[in-house]
Length: 370
Ligand SMILES: Nc1ncnc2c1ncn2[C@@H]1O[C@H](COP(=O)(O)OP(=O)(O)OP(=O)(O)O)[C@@H](O)[C@H]1O
Image (cartoon, rainbow, N blue to C red):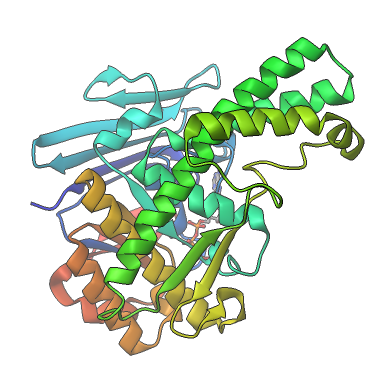
């Protein structure tokens, strides 16, 4: 059996007042006019994973305007070891509730035992040529589907870094600053090694499947953490290097008003392997195909490493592919043996999926099976 969502319920979530959807294990094709709620539904699935979902939105914006209820998303997931009921939503005090099989869970990471989620959206169109921060977030999402604790490590690192920046600005207590830098070094080393290990594994898998690829292969690398020092291989050595560096750079960073070096500054470099060309120089279609190839390879990696195939949320992807590529995408999705959620305004785009998909019409925050 393919792990799949068999029931999805949305309460006061964006433009959905209350909606429920019963699903079988086939792909899910959502069609409807602009602004009807297709992306919102994908976003609802995405918030069942660590992080802030596919729009990176703050959770208060998920709350449906004009509803007295708190937003909530619940799903039943069918797995080989039986069904699981999972859900998340807002607590009255502004916190976040995570429920698994009728009990409160300590954190959203616990959800990763049941589902992992990856997505591609039109907002990622400029990923290769846009700001480095977008590529780091993309990479961190990939890493989080392999290592669920990564998302929290990244945000804890950023929190500690903001504290360092404040202490530098206020010329705060030096011992306190050292303690914060030590914490940053521990988190930063783990973030950096999670990223590099995941990239190495992903690259190996891309190289392996290069020959039969319907999508172009990417060459992936991270820019160096420091220009002048080779990166140590062990976590302890990296941690000590980071702490030393930040200690030595206090004066410069104080003048700059920020922490000028570290894992928050690295960039993901992507090259189109067959054309030996930076991904950013490709046409829009080539860039999209490269991104899809990356996500498909990554989904296979997650399955190999964890035994769980991630759910893929593909927002408006089919519309931008020529018919041959679209067919290749659908074939690749079948090969993954996962339930994919696809959206588009025109049902014709999904005809090649034939009866391998269930079709849902989305109209103004309401869902109907077709
Ligand atoms: N918190 C909210 N409460 C109520 N409605 C919201 C909220 N946030 C967004 N919306 C509405 O949801 C609608 C957008 O839905 P969504 O982005 O899912 O559309 P879509 O079907 O994916 O459209 P497109 O085809 O244009 O991408 C908009 O009408 C927007 O005003």
